[in-house]
Amino acid sequence: MIRIGIEQAKLDQLVSRHKAYFSKNLMNKRLEVHFKTAELDIPTFPSTKQDYMSKKYIRFFSYLRLKMDDILAGEPKKLQDIIDHIETNYRDLPFRSFSEIDGNVKKKAEKEKQADENKEDEGKETKQSNLFRSLTKIFNYTTFTKSGVWCAYDLALGLRLSICPYCNRQYIHSHQDETLKIRATLDHFYDKGTYPFLALSFYNLIPSCYFCNSILKHKKAFSINTHLHPYLHGFEDDIQFYVKFRGQQGAKLDYTSILRADPETFSLGFRFRKGSDLTIKKKAGHNIHDFKLKELYKVHKDYISEIIHKSVVYNDDFIQGLFRSHPRLFTSEEEISRMVLGNYIQPQSQDRRVLSKLTRDVAIQLGLAQKLVFPNYYKVLRRRK
Ligand SMILES: [Zn+2]
Image 1 (cartoon, rainbow, N blue to C red):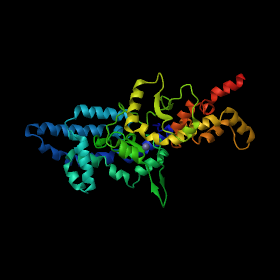
Image 2 (cartoon, helix red, strand yellow; image 1 turned 90 degrees about the vertical axis):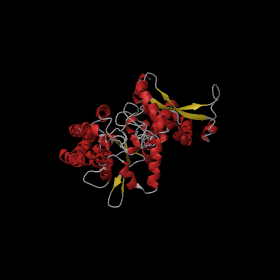
Image 3 (cartoon, protein in one colour; image 1 turned 60 degrees about the vertical axis):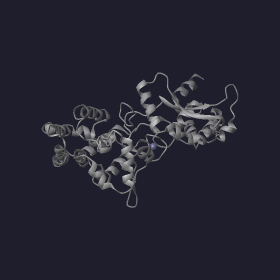
Image 4 (cartoon, rainbow, N blue to C red; image 1 turned 180 degrees about the vertical axis):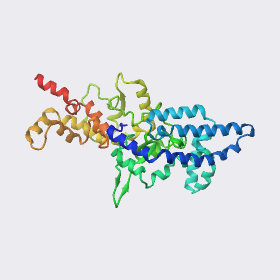
């Protein structure tokens, strides 16, 4: 998990464009038009409750109107505040999709999937409450994914993310020209079936890979209280990949087995830095579990075994030798370390190449990237010499 490290000024610019496109005029008009559809729910309540529910629907729509700026452009904490307010005050309104209202979400999701496969979409639509249907039209994500003055393509292109922030394993470049139009999928951090009013919220749209978005996370309940939000936190150095060698205490490591990626020789896990924030650790644990990071990174054992070998072959003397032999090819020893590791491992560059976080952590553990990771420390050492 890596933080979306886009420059603040650039991010502010994109958020402003997003907010400007979904103008007050446009959204107020949508609220007004679709309130009429939502009201169709009211006769379905017991007659003794209808007047009370009618007032509640009005208050709910007034709240959405009042908070529209925060809904569209508010940072994750503001989105959480809106959810908390709605859960406290409007819990009895059927704003969630049918599958979320039903207690047995999993079973319903399976049924819906089956319905999708059977192309019974129209039937599914009629199952939803009128309020949910109205909200999906006011906060119309489907239209946003198609072309327009400002749409999902513009958002993904503007963010210029290369790597999935959730897994750091897949490229998600977006591209648009006359012949090709592709973009990263956008994950709704807060599920849009549960909170349809957050379907168009800028900070709820996370460019990510298909695996993370649609297979692993899907409709799981995420919040900033339970998981790391990629606009707020990455694992950084608080949570690190860690190579554990088996049965090697006191003995020399068998590098031949490691190179062959013998599954018995080493395993990969995570370690939490001493003294790091407990709540961050807890949330990171949920990210690791829900995105199946331990399981998925097992397939990269061959890559890790190469780093282990490099840590032996490319010691400081070797790197200095290369630097002296090729003064015109390299401008610094750090550049050689990067070439050796084949990856960007500085935290600010971790969104440029897949497996960068894994490379950094294992290289640090094995003492391979010390000069690259801690250049100031090495400058001090050089001066002391
Ligand atoms: Zn991913």
